[in-house]
Length: 167
Length: 136
Image (cartoon, rainbow over all chains, first blue to last red; front, side, top):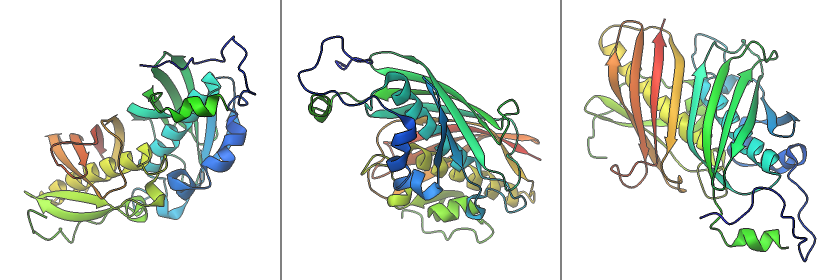
């Protein structure tokens, strides 16, 4: 099904290759539009196979009128977005992916009026699947708000991807 | 659409759900059917629902179903998420999307729900979820 290698090919391409995916740069256009833009997500940090995003507290994103805590829905969105970006960061390629399964275990509510950070690492990829795990926290990653685990599928059937890859 | 019962006035959706544009479409056998229109605020890949927005709709349907049931029993506890597992079954197209939950088990302290979201065809869900909710 998949014929796109997860890492850069050893054979030199005939045209100039695309630069490797960089979460700190990609965020600039990811977060301008759509659902992540509406939520006000922003890039915070990344490593070789992980990405951390930030979700600012906002009154209209609350879950329960009796507390000033962000709803879990926006936190799922944050973790889903950080998951996708961690896959692109780990594989260095911006191959479209779709979420197959995402599990969120909530340890505690986020702090009142506090921003939430979502750090997700892509710990394994195969030709067609990518596996992620991560933590949502509100400033101290050792005191998590939630843990997540997810499985994504790469979409490589789109012929435009090859055209893009080869310039 | 099928069942024209008006939504329960007691059922207020959370700020996040309202802000995302989620509304109660109807009641189906006393269970609320929630809906959201496609728009840029729920868009992920161009022309498709963002997985997080779909999860938000599923989750809101779960809370709405549980809240409706609890209010009918004269209970009004604070609901806290324990966990949610979302399965994405097909891409959310740029169309009106619905979701409805079934309470699989309602205990004293926790509830287990299964939720489905669909677009044109109720029998072809685009996503499903299993949720555990704590009642404090």
